[in-house]
Amino acid sequence: MITEKAVLTEKAGEEQYDRAVRLLHEGELVAFPTETVYGLGALATSEEAVRKIYEAKGRPSDNPLIAHVGTAEEVSEYACDVPEKARILMDAFWPGPLTLILRAAPGVFAPSVTAGLDTVGLRMPDHPVALKLLRRFGRPVAAPSANTSGKPSPTSADHVATDLDGKISYILDGGRTGIGIESTVLDLTSDIPAILRPGAVTADMLVPLIGPVNGSAEASEAGTDAPRAPGMKYTHYSPDAPVFLIRPDRNRIGEAVRSLQEEGHRIALVAPEEFGGSDADWFFPAGREGDPESVSADLYDALRACDRTGADIILAASVGEEGIGRAVMNRLNKAAGGKWFGR
Ligand code: TXA
Ligand code: MG
Image (tube, rainbow, N blue to C red):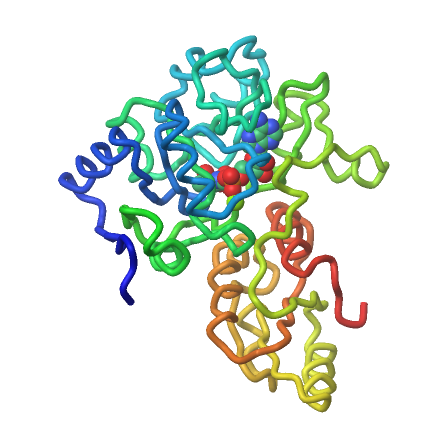
């Protein structure tokens, strides 16, 4: 394919870090792996550089970006009024899949990083390639997930190239990401901290350290659930064909596939590997039954694979809400727009 600017993908090594750092200094975009998903990085203090992120992704400009740091010490330069709870959580979970929303230090970030808010999301990713890049660069890197806005986030360099070839200059390839879904976003600027986006760091892990948290399972049952992060109102994580959630029950899936095929549909099934024997036209395994971490790791790759088929309906098996299962269900619900097959 001939593109304006073919993307260069290289395995991370010494020269590659140098190239990535040079490009970031020049205000170019660099995609890099984290432990959650690939990020699309730009120098967070440069408005011109950060605007390129929104352009490449086709991202709505009212949706702020996460600034990535290589050390916890940098936080006092980038945020002010940092509460004790933030220090406790950084000690416990950084580097790791927890983004903290804090008051932004005035004048540091390009306005497009915070989308005009007076707060900023900060995160130190737990991935050797990301950490080495961030520490060499020594400046904050604004990085949303490196996908076209609305598509599932990328968990491999290939996914990034599929979405952004011709739109970005460089991908630092660090193989497949581990966790597979985006970080937990925790707002520490409200009286009671609020989970704005669930992720691998769960309310159960936060509460023993900092006390009550809104957006925990209890809060959503009581109807006092926190407002979502600005980005959560948009359609997200969606393959091209409509997605329907379905309970992971062999008979139910078998009947759904049969009745939909009788109506002339072609079905892709995304479910734990144990569901491989169904009559679906395409099957993309996502993890193993009763193991939500393994589902999380495979989910976006499986959803993306559906776009390379002729399926006009995608059935996706639900998971239990224990541990990271809650975050997996949050993403699946978004992908399905809340639709279930015969619930
Ligand atoms: O795991 C991740 O978090 C990945 C990797 C690359 O680090 N990044 C990521 O970024 O998922 P993005 O831009 O796709 O999602 C950032 C989320 C959005 O839902 C956004 O609305 C929210 O964080 N967010 C960012 N800054 C915020 C702020 N100041 N206040 C409230 N929400 C914020
Ligand atoms: Mg994203």
